[in-house]
Image: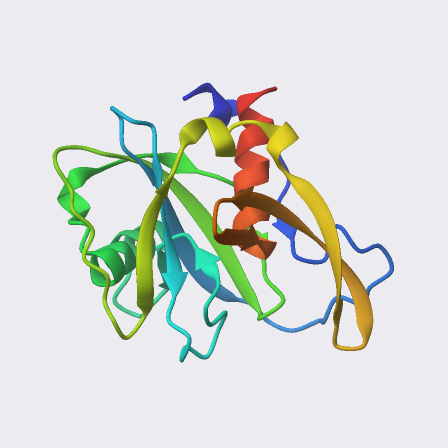
Amino acid sequence: MAALRVSAAPSSDYDLTPGIEVPDTPLREAGVLAAFHPQSGHLILTKRASGLRHHPGQIALPGGKVDPGDADQTAAALREAHEEVGLPPAQVEVLGLLPPHRTVTGFSMTPVLGIIHGDFTPTPERGEVDEVFAVPFDLIANPANYRIERRLWRGEWRAYQTVPFGPYYIWGATARVLYALAHRLNT
């Protein structure tokens, strides 16, 4: 995939808000899976369970922190996608990695790009995922579909990326990672 050969720096939830103080704390490694169906081009996203500690109720790529048994961020992304949406790792062809993204919750999140081979019917893990849905490739691949919004966060105005899709509010780290992919696809 040509987009993986485009040079890009890591991104951060802090990038769009100049002057905001970035905490000097160690980051926890995480991997998320941007998995596409080859026939439809749709991308799998989740609506996280409302009771989760990090990012409850938000739209996210399947994934999570690197556990001690994971070899790396790719292994974590594949394991978490299997746990969260029932996607068997053997059905995913890993294409490569995008640069890591620093979240405000202290994660260094590495996006893993993949293609889903064969039939796949998502099965959400109810403790972690309220819903699994698919987003058209054309929506996320076009940088013109993204916009920057602002909201008050911890007493300061913060800017963040969004990409509207029907009833789903895709924003923050997920939208920033998808925007970076869209930018690479159009470079």
